[in-house]
Length: 344
Ligand SMILES: Nc1ncnc2c1ncn2[C@@H]1O[C@H](COP(=O)(O)OP(=O)(O)OP(=O)(O)O)[C@@H](O)[C@H]1O
Ligand SMILES: [Mg+2]
Image (cartoon, rainbow, N blue to C red):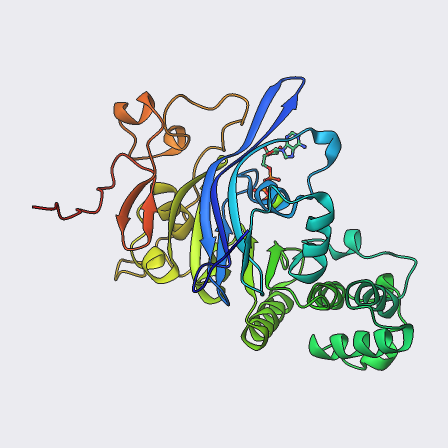
């Protein structure tokens, strides 16, 4: 372990996760690299099956043991005390401690992660009792403060209610309260609002932004919706078929998307396709075709079968992820590498 100053909260390098199955090795995540700065949000974007959840579960070491996952790569997570650790190499015990004090995760469907037989107050209190060593009364008082923090009205009464008595939006707030109770430096939010209707979705995202501003936590925000990314992320990583196809700070990504897949995702957004002074299309663009099976990837670029700009070159070999600008990378034979001035 080393001490680091002024660096990313988390750096992920060449992360790969594969599952042996009866049909062969499923390569869900291949050679994925990205970082998350302190107090900032990195969004992981891609359509269903692109490997977003497997990436987050691998980092949190929450993959089911029975899946026999083959994991490789390195990470560097910097704790609030400034210690750098590799999440993939910590012992189970060290990892549990980190999950209680530094790392928290919220999921798409809060019902599956809340215990139906305990009141929401008891669940939050139990978690802070374990992690902060508070007694029962102090823990319950802390639980009520957490429910206030996530803007649950009448927290003093709600604390005694059971998960099934709450609306979807309220349950998601309880999940966030539970995650915040351990005062995380990194919150991984896997599709935290997908199951909610649009107005509630917006409220939850604003709440997460507020908590981030107040606590300085970093967020890994997983979503298939590029629309919410524009307002809620600092850096964006676009995944396709288990690989990073483009990564960039949020503004340049939206202004000049480089990979045809990112361009397609952006063109799918309502009100985005006509952004550059072009006429609004009659109907929303959708990317044709489907993502190929991780068991039988095409030999070249994984997106080639769906790409309107594909040429013979794209079928020959998987394009490398190349640096295309300041903090920008793309995996496409048609993007040009950033010209690096040569030393004389
Ligand atoms: N335990 C496992 N065994 C075999 N394959 C798996 C396992 N877990 C995930 N996969 C496969 O890995 C790929 C990536 O799955 P993942 O859940 O990460 O996708 P995702 O990007 O989170 O999609 P979604 O947007 O639907 O949540 C999928 O093809 C999935 O079927
Ligand atoms: Mg997922």
